[in-house]
Length: 274
Image 1: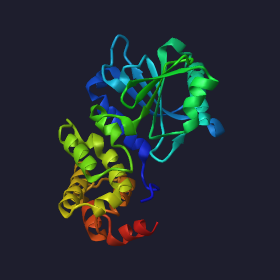
Image 2: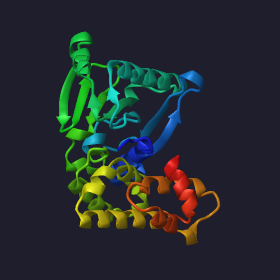
Image 3: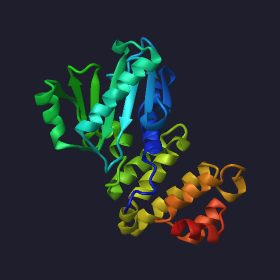
Image 4: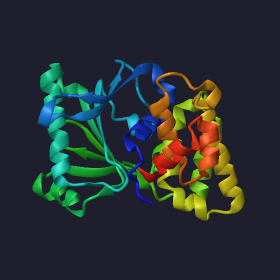
């Protein structure tokens, strides 16, 4: 299925916050940080870490005070040009925030890496690339510490990032659905699951009947917890209703979506055609 309706970046924010949940008191997540405006606008995730705190989870061991994170959605390749752009982000951030370069790191999270990038690192730039953990490589010799996270190669230690893709099997979905049960606040993963459901709808439709039924029940449970049932719809939530409805179009029938989101059947039909 096409990912045209999938909001990968918000789902990524869900995922990385959950991965670093045990350190939430020491981290400040600044989503979609706009460093500039106009044609040079740069939207990034900035993770600020409190001084003196060590992040022991693999994806955060590299962190210093200011940590710039660039995320690429599952079908996007990360090229040499993209790498240059992320380095430019670092320099712009340094300039605009009068930050100390010794307090900055760069993290790139991707699913696809261009074949020419490793050659660029080592041959063209003389940088060293070393696997620090499964799916996580450190690039040393750069102006700031850099880590490249390939979510396809991560282990279950970082399950939420590992499964953030459009290539899931039914057992992959079951794993994160089970992990969701242990979250202190399950609403943290709402956008994450909507992205997975939308991007993996073919897998869901082709799964065993019981699997599909369980996933449908999960969709409805998420919608309920998000306060999107008709009885709890408040002013200003129409856009969110539409977002949830779109994500469910490939999983549930129009009548059920209308019933559970408070939209009319005609409204859901219109979303289906848009």
